[in-house]
Image (tube, rainbow, N blue to C red; front, side, top):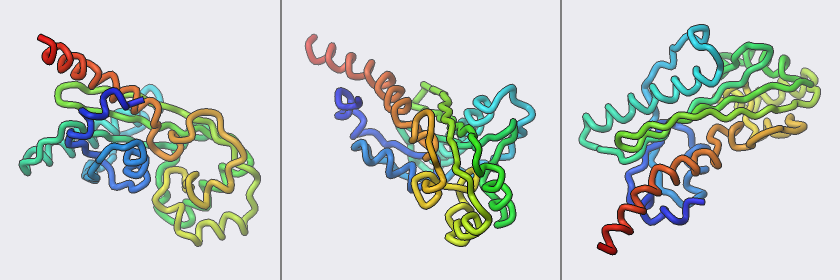
Length: 215
């Protein structure tokens, strides 16, 4: 999808406002170079202040992007593109973030067992003066889990830095019976929408360069 503008993107200073190696790997797999810069934003927004889950994850992602961009510019590093994302698992109107304890991880996984839940990932792309925000959501169905399976999974340590207490791209994927939506939304970075946004942002630059070259 990005091939017509890849020659432009490869020369851009692209920053991912995240410490997630999973998100970095996804972007690198499509041929782009990206540097990780974990955001220092406290992620203390009140979900009750937002009309819906999409607005919440988008606003959180925006704060991550703005904090990282400001900090980098103050240090003399001017990014061309900053990408931020926030992922949240939801069930019965409640939001599940990263568990803060093994007990909380257990409670989350027990709640998800044998049921369908929805994962929201909000993404913000800031390219100079352009800011694009979007959210993708995917329904995930877990099979029924017994206590030994849940405790065994928690013992791997994988749930502790994952929204909802599981990682679909790791051992947690063995709990997933089926999904309805974009798999990469659950991983934490919906690739199709991200690439669509990047293409639209840089397609105009490509057209400008073509016109300049022929005049």
